[in-house]
Amino acid sequence: MPTGNMQYSKHRGASHERPPTAMPDTLTRDNLRDHVVRELSDGSATRAEILLVEVNGVRAAVKDYRSRDRRYRATIGRWLISREAAMYEYLNGVPGIPAFYHRIDRYALAVEYIEGKNCSQCAPGELGPEFFDALREIVAALHARGVAHCDLKKDTNIIVDDHGRPHVIDLAAALRRHGGPLPMRPLMCWLWPRFAKDDIKAISKLKRKLAPELLTAEQRRALEHRTRAERLLKLIMRTARRIIKLLATKGEDARKARA
Ligand SMILES: Nc1ncnc2c1ncn2[C@@H]1O[C@H](COP(=O)(O)OP(=O)(O)OP(=O)(O)O)[C@@H](O)[C@H]1O
Ligand SMILES: [Mg+2]
Image (cartoon, rainbow, N blue to C red; front, side, top):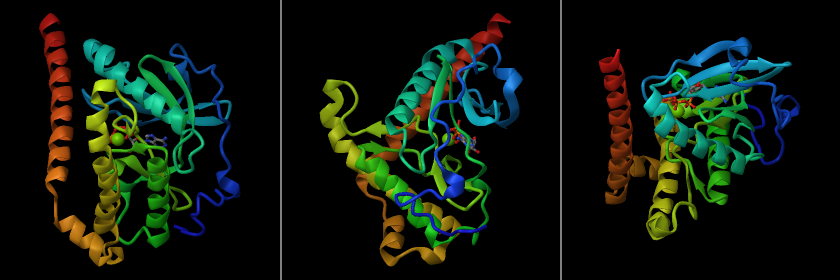
């Protein structure tokens, strides 16, 4: 896999010009199934279905909660789609983040499809230093815009395109430094830099898995040592996931009981 020039900030390369900023909005809930090329992920009770669709030659990845439990999709699913859509919209134009196309309805959104594979499908030795430098650049660009990704440790959220370049997806958990309700702002101001640091650590974690020889002594030390703040963040994220899962399971149980 070529790992040539990955300086996103300089240029994206002829084959990586920005795609059309809007996919034809003829893609609607009613005709979505007619445009499906294939399923990228069938999700789970709590995770959306991800579809690769094509409209007039433009490909998009569609994240869709429509087929999840009715109560779950009407609450958590809808909330997750709306915050992810807002985050994609806010970051539109940031190199390495798929372009936002549009929201199909309350439960689904469409973004630029990145031809390639996610990092969980990569083998050790496959990614070189240019890849990790470019990934660091994307994360720095997010942070410069006041956004912490918060879910980069999941290697399915990092895509390697067919030219060996990284792209960051799945902004559902992302947090804005100055966002959120007013009473939560002081807490967010304290938490945000820690989440941002965690994003950086996620890159080292991926390096340790796929290219450990590229880790610096400092990165190794940081990976071995988990601070109290990191433990707290982990607890917050795990609790949030458990609550979401519990709500989904309850919804599913209620549905089965009714059937
Ligand atoms: N824009 C995209 N371009 C290419 N592939 C994508 C895109 N969006 C999603 N995918 C594929 O679908 C997978 C899941 O997407 P995403 O992370 O958004 O959903 P998820 O519900 O969080 O799933 P997971 O828990 O596996 O991360 C990705 O790992 C990737 O393989
Ligand atoms: Mg994901």
